[in-house]
Amino acid sequence: MKKRILKFNILLLFMLFSCKCISQIPIVWGADNGTLPNDYKSSGNYYYKDIPNYLDSFVGTWEYVNGNEKFQIILTKVVRYHYINTNLNFNFYEDGIVLQYKKFLNDNLTFTSPWYQDPNFSTMDGIILDGNITDYGRVTKTVYDLQIFGGGVKKQGGEYFYPDCIIKKLPSVSGQPDKIKFNLYMRQSMYGETNNEAYHGLPKYSIPNDIEMVKVN
Image 1 (cartoon, helix red, strand yellow):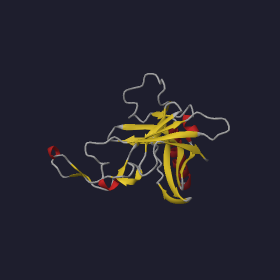
Image 2: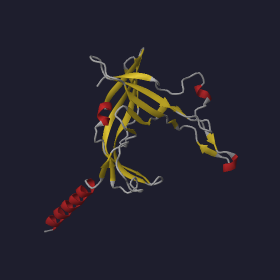
Image 3: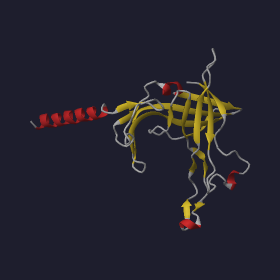
Image 4: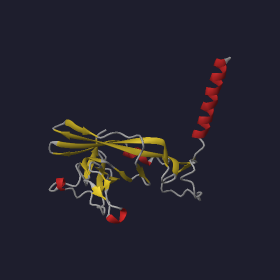
């Protein structure tokens, strides 16, 4: 009898969870979704679904080669991620892209960035993929609060750079692999995090920037 009750409870929970999963209203990034309530991003009732399948054309491994150095990005589609941010009062679902990058020297893998489950790239047209990336080879110097905020350490040295990243699909050419343009942007803040003396004479980023990449997988 107890086993039957346990099985019934498990089945009931599964049914409730299933109903919850299919209850969200699908909307599309950048599309005319009609009139939405003011709290649609905080209600948990809406789902930014990739109905046009725009994200699919970005999925795969893209590569840039410069002499004996090679740089790869791996773009993976994440479906129905539940995005919650209590500080911004966000609670919605979304499809998106996660980015992982790899660096090679003489075809030997020298670095692989972590892979995160939460997507940080989206597109409104299937041509421009917009998001941000972590440059693990660059860190900030210690940043101090302005005196008007009491002074003291605001940001201890050792935090990575977080540039914005724009990935653009380039026009297809018959008989050639697909290509993208990869660009990083980072505004200089009032605290001068990127003005680290250790990087004088070096590029701002530790990874290639403003490059064309070829799809290899």
